[in-house]
Image (tube, rainbow, N blue to C red):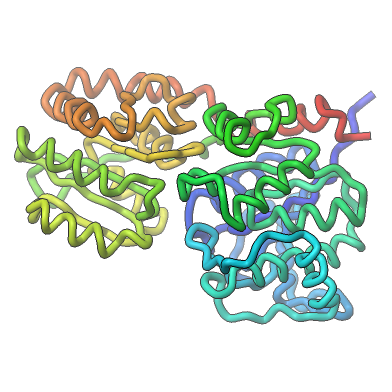
Length: 429
């Protein structure tokens, strides 16, 4: 007898083409892979109503009449079992404007009631504003929507959707799964604050946690006090891309950094590594792709470090432009202080770029052939990069090992492990 096809209410904050980081890409690719094994209803804050995706049904809740819950816009494609509802909201999940008010579920439940069922979400922007209000608005509207949905499991992604998951579990009695892509401890380095308290409460309420790495599972156990018996580690996958090579517009070699310019990603360490490399190997350019609150300070530090025309900042790049950058790069460097996974390193490995990555990362678990260093040991990272630039045989060996590692990870593998975990933890009737 065939097993029941689970109906999953998926709660996410980002989804292409409106993304701020790897979370949106992961939610998209994972959800798409799961549609072969489960029926997925994806609820997200905002999307582009003109966005088309093969094999998915798209429904925009931002175009929904709040009182009647009838769609004003439907964009259909061919895949059965995938619906995407969207709510327009206003939040940058990586640079939250958190007030000093103490975390209180009682106050949050009252705010949920105050919002009411008929509030229409018609905000203009996705990012910025009062983060607590946006999280509560999202949670209240999704909880109201869920009353008319048929689902077996609530599957929330990261702290922005945990409150919604809690409200829905309390109302429906259905099991709550929380997928952990990033933690407040990773971002701030401290186990305190409003987001930390929400994460801790959400993980305590969850029936199952899915950290994206054993590294993250260790952080959850150590800093949030959650038993590993409640966890199933699900490594991120990778989408198949056709790598290519291009000639750089300059003669020097290229060392690449891709990521948000925040403390967590170690952009200042990247500059320290650059200085150490350039002291011994002049024919190198260092390229930093990304945006964030460290942008201005990185410009100032690069000037103080006298990196001159050997250091470049691109700002945010879309997928095609980022792949063009991978195509001209010789070494990828990820000096993150605390990285739950590190999808950009996987993308670099797909382009046969040798990777020098922080040991404090989940991706180190799935790319054992990469070169690893403790994030504070910038001297060791610089030595690795110099050796890769000077020894093409060594560089080829490192990149070839990483390509072999990629055969062990994929989004269908991750999706299959998720469905198995639902059953292993007895979440399906």
